[in-house]
Length: 452
Ligand SMILES: *Cc1c(COP(=O)(O)O)cnc(C)c1O
Image 1 (cartoon, helix red, strand yellow):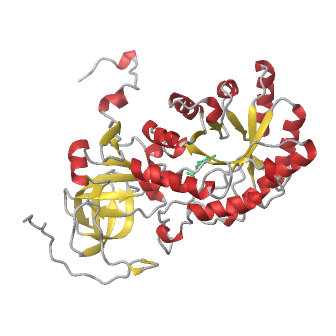
Image 2 (cartoon, rainbow, N blue to C red; image 1 turned 90 degrees about the horizontal axis):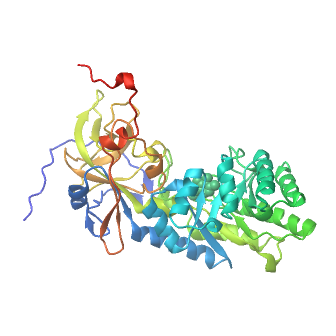
Image 3 (cartoon, protein in one colour; image 1 turned 45 degrees about the vertical axis):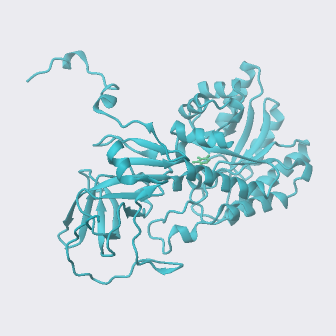
């Protein structure tokens, strides 16, 4: 029989944790395996910390989202938001499922092309589209989502030089009842700017006006906001039909659906509060179907969902470095995962689970990362089992934004593996080494000689 790990005796102060819809949670469930692969084996082979992506969860989540929309609306297209996670293996899974690419920089545009996505399946968003890339986008027949008038005029000039009509949409921002408003991207609906931009595009005859785009925010907890946004875009589409007899090809509702993570300070866990894909789909498709758009002209509905498609599929595995008491007596655990790898710990209360069964003894604990920096806090306070040096743990729901916003700071970025649906493990991004960093550096001649 396996020996049970020693846990030191302790006196427990009774303190209430956060309730969920099932009441108080009392048990701490270990995460010993991810898709049937043992956490300990993964770390033995690929090191600690380690990012793990479940391809199975990715595909299931995508299919669930696609089903929610396609059962409610005739034409649905997802476009994978590259900035949410642009590891090629991740993008390719979503592309295999049928997603186009949604990019917000020249670098991301090139990455999508390198992943085999043709220009006419790339949506080009963002406030910074260098001329060189606007040209490329025009030539590759990508959909350019115009952000401001300066871009519109640059495009008009490029269209004349290249003798091609760029395929465009405008990004529209609007009041959807969420404050502060996101009004820095695109053209405003309420003050008439969006309609002005559309008229300029139609009158100039330099463009193919293909669609209307909005991305109203991120981690949006209300579905009503999407209903309002869809109704406003539909209103613009109806205006174009009426005034120019012009029928747009698509309405793009952007991303922003909440994942099941718990925001800091939230009373209930995200698993209880995040709307389902069905609820988002209901709000958006109702607004479109019930709008003034003629049924035969109903545009394709594009979704650029990022976070909600990948968050659940990502795990960050790590190891306990040490335990110590703060001067107040508060328990703290130092782990080898820092905020440099887990950027989202600034706004989420991430779930951290032991990788082996523990007793139900717990204590309120601060979880600190390994950086020699005061801000390196993974959890300020959580009810945590009494893990010891060398014990493994698993942080769940970290697939969105961490593998793009991570920083090379103090330590190097670790391996990333993907577990395929047959539970085979694939290395999809190799860990960095001193050499990775040094090969980007150049030493001026007068500093070449190594002085003692
Ligand atoms: C970031 C972004 C997305 C993805 O947003 P999520 O909140 O991850 O769903 C989609 N569209 C645009 C334009 C974006 O900037």
